Amino acid sequence: MRCIATFLTFSSLFSVISARYNISISNQRTTSKVPQRSGFKLTWSDTFSQPGAISSEWQYDIGTSYPGGPPNWGTGEVQRYTTSLQNVYVSKNQQLNIVPLRNPRTGEWTSARIETVRDGFKCQAGGEMIIEARILLPGGGRQDGVWAAFWAMGRKFRRNGNYGWPNTGEWDIMEAVNGGSTILGTVHCGVFPGGPCDEPNGIGGTTSIARGIFNTYALRIDRTSGEWERESLTWSVNGEEYHSISGYNVGDYRTWSNLVHEPFFLLLNVAMGGGFPNAWAGRDTPIAETTPGYAHEFLNHVLQRCKAKTGRKKHVCPNAEGVLKHAPPVQDLRCVRPVEIQQSSTHMSKKCCLQEPYLVLRESLAVHDTNLPSSVECQSFTNIVNDVIGLQRGFQPCLR
Image 1 (cartoon, helix red, strand yellow):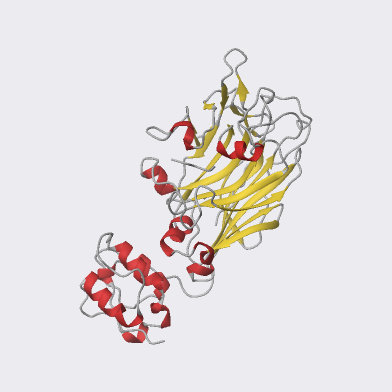
Image 2: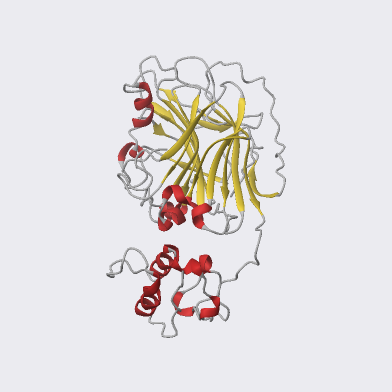
C-alpha cells in the first residue's frame, strides 16, 4: 500500500478479500496442502483450517488510521476497517474472506485489514526467503475503487509506534485496483518525498493476470551473493518472474539494509478508494455504481520458506563483553560492535575501500551528527576508524 504521511514463503489456505457478491467461484475446490519448493524449508504457514474468526496468528487493524497516525491510513482510502464477521471471516472451505460492504442508508464503506502478530519474517545473510500466497481476484461487475493487497512492512515501523515509513521499508507483493487485469509488485524505502525509491511512487513493476481463478503471488529475497549491491528482490506470478530490483538499483546501503536485512510482518487487506485507485481510474473512487460485497480470495496458502546459507562458514557475532579474535569478512562488520573489533592488516582486503564498512561503523555507533565525509577515501579509512571509535590498534589502509 502506498503510504503518504515488505526470504519467506507463506503457505496457507487463505481466501483473500472475499465478498458476498454472487460470482461463480464458490464451487472451485481448494486444498490446504502446502506446495513444496526444492532446497527450501517451510518455516511458517497458516492454513485457515478453522471456520469463523481469524486465528491468533493475526491481529486486526481497526478504524481509519493507526493510533496517532495520519487519517485514512495515509493513502486517502475511504473505508472504515472492522472486526465484524461480515467483513472478515474464514469460510467452511478454508478460505480467508475480506468483504468490502457499503451501508445502504449512510453510504459508508467498511472492510478489513489484518496483520500477522509475528513480525520476524527475515532473510538471513547468505540465504534466500520466499513469501507467497494463492489469491483469487474476482472478475465482473463494477469494481471502481476496490484496492486489494498482499504486502509486508518493516518491524521497525510497528515497534516505533507505527512511525517511520518509508524508511522502515515496505514490500508490496501484490496490489490490484479497480477490477483490472494488471497487478503490481513494488517496494517503498528511504525518505518521503523522493529519495532512492522515488516516494510516494516506490520502485515497482507490473504484469497481467487472469481474474476469477487462483494465482500464486510470490516475492523471493536473495542474499546469497555476500555483497549487498548484488542482493535482490524478485516478484513472480505462478512461477513466472516479472520484476526484480537489487542493491545497485537503490544505491544506498543503509536504505537497502532497512528494506532487506530487517524483519517484517505481513498484511492482507481490501481498501476502498484512495490516491492509488483514483490515479488509475482518472477520477475519485469508489463511485455510486461500485458493487459492494466483491469476493477477493487470498486462498490456499500463505507460506514462509527459507533456504540454507551457502558458501563460507557462518560467522558468529560476539556478545557485548566478547572480543573478536579473528576478524570477519568486511561485509559482516555490521554485526560486530566496533569496540570489539581486533583487526590486523592480514585480514583486510580491497573490499574495505567500499562505502559499506564506513556506513556500518557509523550506524553501529549511532553517530548522526558527527562531521564525517559522505564517502570513504581508502587512505583515510584508518583515521576514520580511529577517530570515531577510538580504536588505537586501527585498521591498515587499503591498497587498490
